[in-house]
Structures are given as structure tokens and as C-alpha cells.
Amino acid sequence: MRLSLVTKNLKPSATLAMNELISEKQRRGEQVYHMGFGQSPFPIHPSIREALCNHADERRYLPTQGIHALRNQVSEFYSKMFGLDYSSEQIIIGPGSKILLFDAMMCLEGSVFLPSPSWVSYDQEAHLLGKDIHYIETHPETSYLLTPEALESAIRQHSPTLGQQKILVLNYPCNPTGCSYSKTQLKELADTARNHNVQILSDEIYALLSFRDHEHHSIAEFYPEGTILTGGLSKDRSAGGFRVGVMLLPEQEQDLLKAILAVASNTWSCVAAPIQYASLEAYRPTPEITQYIADCTSIHELVTRSVHQKLITHGIRCPRPQGAFYLFPDWNSDRDVMQRGGITTSVELAGTILEKWNVASLPGMDFGMQSDDFCIRVATVDYDGEGALERFRADPKRAWRNPNEFVKEVAPRIIMACSQLGSFTDSIR
Ligand code: PMP
Ligand code: GLU
Image (cartoon, rainbow, N blue to C red; front, top):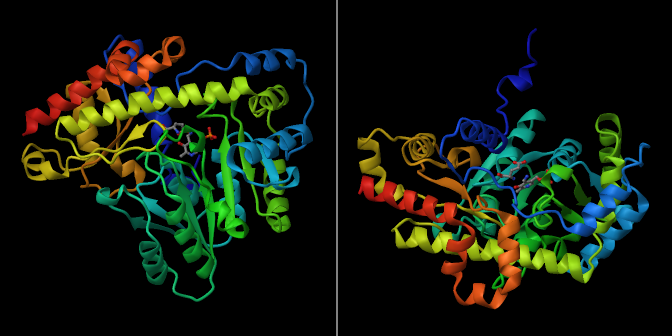
């Protein structure tokens, strides 16, 4: 059988492929510190679990857009958590935000602009759709954030026809860096986007995992007419395997909504019925659910910031994360010695770190970085989430008073992985 042209150069999702590779290694009894996959480690909240059990008999197809009660609930959730005003008619419930982003990209005309680094799947989704893809370089000194100047210059270079529509995917807090935008930065990006007819896919799936010293804002606050916002249950409610994502569209974009629903109804039909009913509970901002999200976020902050501190102490450059559970260190200052030692790309760098130091990560190249930029993404979730949550809840003050001790207790593998990265660094210096 011959493959279609578009799928010939398509890569499997780098994140999912790494997870499968490491699971296989672990099955064979190999010791691997798994920093290669971003999956929140906490147990499902009991009220969501109970709702799922209670709705096991829901067997019918549901409306493609999602049941009305759930869309209403999502509307209330975004209003309470983010102060954003979306009616249930502007919301689509999908089987994960990944496919919703793909469907929106499919329905929108225009080439796709991605800051580098960007999460692995945007590029491949755009590629599948035959879209032109333009990466916009960002820099570690400015936390790999996109500036309005860089956006403008990329537009001038790649899409000079005045008024032509373009798509920009923004993700904050960012996978792979953990960095995010301030209100002022978002406002400036919004102005630039509006002036140049840039429609924004704003992937805010990590919004509620923002750390205490960072207040999350959405670019939709400043550019509601040109922002399509996505989120879901995968990260802050630790339910990646539930496959629930949400998309919030501008009020006036009826045609876009209809087009996305037409694509959806002819491909994935609707989100599984029991899962939609369980999601009603997941999107109910009760004190219990909000406390659960806050506790999980606290643990992500304690662990991720502690890893960051350790990397810095080992002399590894790495922007300070403001949310999520990722870090994006680089060894560009060791370029010469690495090249002499036969490491010439980030793929070889990640390969060496895995083979010789047993730490799984992903090469910067998977995130759209130049091949000889010596950066990797590490995820900070290789620990027992249930135990960590119990320990944190027993005495949160103690955890905050002594983060290193807390992390040592609940995430010993993470500590080991950090010291392996330190030893690797020492070995090349
Ligand atoms: N965006 C980013 C930045 C992600 O890291 C992920 C992780 N899976 C997704 C979107 C997709 O999440 P999901 O399809 O599970 O909603
Ligand atoms: N978002 C996770 C990661 O970047 C994994 C899940 C996925 O890629 O869909 O590691």
C-alpha cells in the first residue's frame, strides 16, 4: 500500500513516542529517570471519579458540540476562574484540546506562525494540513517569549501582502519552557496581532498551573475578536486519559464554529458520553475541586522550582519557570567541548543523556529549535502523585518552609535525575 504524500514526512508525536520507549525500557527492568513525558501524576478527584461511575450507563451519542449542561458549566468555570465571559454557544467540547487545535487550524485560512520553541504537535498538525509553517526565533535571555517586534518582523518577511490572514499559536505557561506572559506583554502582542490580521490560537491548557508569583491572563482579554482559546482536563485535573478539551470562540465567529462542528461531526462525532457527564463535575468550581487544583499546582511549583534551582547550581542555564511542569535547559556554552566529543545536535545530546546518564528528556529540535542548539526539555513529574498530595496536605506550611526537604521526600527520583544532569555537565567541563 502506498502512503499519501502528506503522511510520508509526518513524525509520530515525540512526547508519546518517548513515553512508550521509556515504558518499554522500564518493563525490561532498566533504570530510567523519566523526564521525557509531561503527565500530571495526581489521582483523579473523588467527585469526578464518582460521577464517572454513576454515568457508566450513558450509551448514546451526544451532540457534537457537547451537552448543553457541560458547556454551561465550562462557561461558568471560565468566568469564575479567569473572569472571561463566554456563553455556552461559544464553547465546543472535544476529545482533547489537541484535536480541537487541529480542527481550528484546518478551518482557518492562512499560514501558521510558531514561536520556537513550541510544543511538538502544532508543527505536525500544520504539516498535515499542508500549511506553510514559519518559526519565529526567541531567546533564552528573555525566557523564550515572543515579542511584538519579532512577530512583526516575521510577518514582514513571510507574509508581506497587506491584510492577508495569518495564524499564530501561543502557549502560556509554555510547554517546553514553563515561562509565561505578563498582562502588558499580552496586550502588546494583541495590538500587533490585530494590526496585522493575525488570528491567535491561544493554548492555555496550563493556565491554572501558574505559580504563586505569576498571575495568569489570557490574550482573549485584549483581543477577544481574534482569539480562539483552548484548555482541558489533561493538566490541572490530571485527566489526560479522559480526553477532554474545550475551545472558546469569539462571539461573532458563527461560521468558524459551524465549520469546526462540521469537521468534528464527520470525524470524531462527540466526546464519550460517560466522560462528558463526569466532566460536569470536573468543571464545577466547588471549594473541593479548586482546592485540589491549588494543591496540585503547589506541588508542581515546589518540585519544578527546586529542579530549576538545582540546574542553576550545577551551572546549567535554564529560564525560570512560572507555571506547568517543564524546564528548558541548554548547554550552548559547552558547544565546543560537546562537538569535540561527538555531540553535534540536541538529538545527540538527549540521546547521550539517556544512554549514559539514564535520564529521558526530549531534544530541543522536537520543539522547533535549530538542530545545533543544545537544549532539551525536561518534565518534572516522575514521582508518586498520590503520596505527594497526601504529604503536602498533611502540612503545607512545612512544605513551603523547606521545599528541598519536601521534594527530597516525595520525589527522590527527580532529585537523582538532577544529580545525573549535574554529573553529565561536570563530565563535559
Ligand atoms: N497543548 C500543550 C501545550 C500540551 O502540552 C498538551 C499536552 N498533551 C496539549 C495541548 C494537548 O492536551 P490534550 O489533547 O490532552 O487536551
Ligand atoms: N503534553 C505532554 C508532553 O508534552 C504529553 C501529551 C501529548 O503530547 O499529547 O509531554
